Image 1 (tube, rainbow, N blue to C red):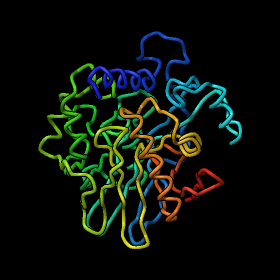
Image 2 (cartoon, helix red, strand yellow; image 1 turned 90 degrees about the vertical axis):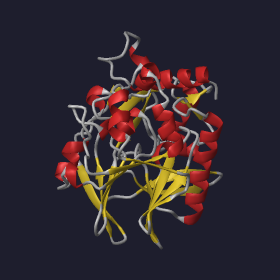
Image 3 (cartoon, rainbow, N blue to C red; image 1 turned 45 degrees about the vertical axis):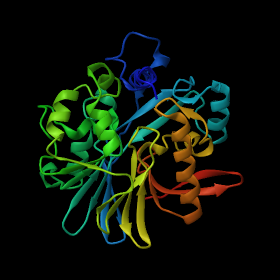
Image 4 (cartoon, rainbow, N blue to C red; image 1 turned 60 degrees about the vertical axis):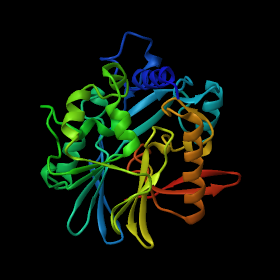
Length: 319
């Protein structure tokens, strides 16, 4: 992808995700509004012998204007899919819920939410961790799916220091290079307004891994889902029959992304590859019955993809 194309894609991300109080003065439909998250901050469940928590960080409502979802389609195209699922036709809601997993000797955090990057739309992770009984200093490993502001925003605290000072931060090598190579403008466009401080703080903590690497033997293996970003990674958690697949941003919306995986999403820096990764996640997971954790689906984001006719549907799990 040419640098100019990358910059345009990043700017689309900024325009879509920034709260109205910080965005340029544009019509309301140009921006995403914070959505309500007034429910329990941390829900517990199990992955075999591993204990886990779905952690609320925030939520966004995006207008149905084809600038983010269904790029190249019409609002009527998107509305038809939403209406068939008994959803409002004028907006698409996504949540943000990082995942915490506890093994016998480790505390594992998957993504860190938005931090202060998008104002009131996110930044609830530390409170949710407290509700789960977890101190930030006890986290041993942070696994980042990709370097976008609603996933890396919680890595630094308000003072600009590491929020999880004792943790190794695992990030795909291609995304680490991507993050380091941003300038102030393009970093701000993905929500990394504290870019220089972030890269400086992460450098001694980073584990920049190759696609598909086994990161913690028998517990966490990276799964290559690039396209959304150059090094976007999912994570297979657990072993044997008891596994959970953390899919990151290979899918965003629990209806549109699942039922129309070939539709373009403005957030994908390489749209054709992002579409291929999305279809790959859906087809393989539906065929195998793989249990899924979807960070942007309705809370808690645990469930399965199932084949329905010629397509797929999301079947959520109650925890």
